[in-house]
Image (tube, rainbow, N blue to C red; front, side, top):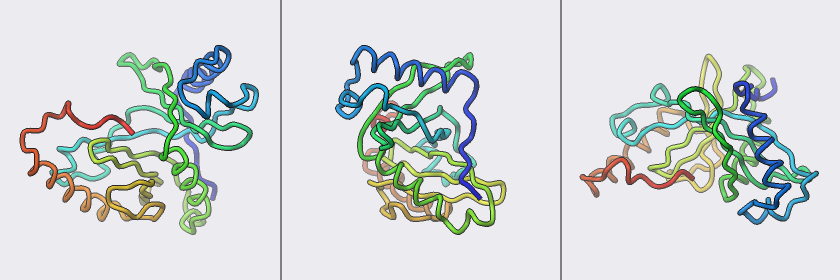
Length: 200
């Protein structure tokens, strides 16, 4: 079965597209690949919902049941090559916030992992929805392939627990992350949550 790309809420695709066109028209991109790309070659693909889990939940042994949705992410292509990502969050009233465009190692890692995921033997037996799990406090980003029966996690490079591009059972991944989170907490017992690293 094909890897399922979920449909974002109404207004999200239009917000991403309009922001992309506006920045391209006025040459306002701050990142190199987007700034150098031909406007008419830019495209938007691979929508996936973004989820996150707080450090305290990881320390306490939580798993995917603690993940909460925080927005939507797209891959941006130029002449068919993935060069950036666009992420959009939703305001408390449900309206989409302006998209943020980024480049970097996680962009290429996402494209590579998605391509590999399409060939996984598990997809022959069940339909999986593409999601992204992000834990900024531990610098982890992972593809989350979700189905009603099971979940598969694929850490993106660079990963704090290694195993980049490999399927890791959720229980094992969260066990490794919990050990790291507890080690961080022990080293900095008075760390405020607001001091977490920026979103990768």
